[in-house]
Image (tube, rainbow, N blue to C red; front, side, top):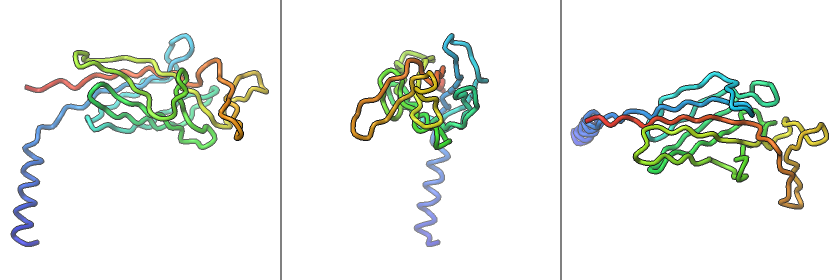
Length: 167
């Protein structure tokens, strides 16, 4: 290592050490049933302001399934992306709007914490189909039309606690 590179590396290390360590967001994820009763233990995670990912176990048709919850923080709140790990579950999409991808949770600047209920529909083949009495999404490759489910497959309570500002 040249003396110049050593000096640059030392300055970079000093700047990292001198940078204030931002407190993490506190995130809690709980699966709820239709009557708003918790059906899983709450998963708590401390997320840096850059965001984080957390593996969670959620019930789908009375069977625990692995999911990955990705949380990204922005100025006005957070985005939560939920991805099934099992391929036969397909995608988790927003139940009300049908959005594919992350769901936005608004957190106003004056709010220290925020609790929101998010509802998701699963599109995969492991989800019960309409022939067995439920109303699963039915894909048609020739059309954008699909049957909408009457109830979400997953209901999550997301609790976000903003990091305290150190003085």
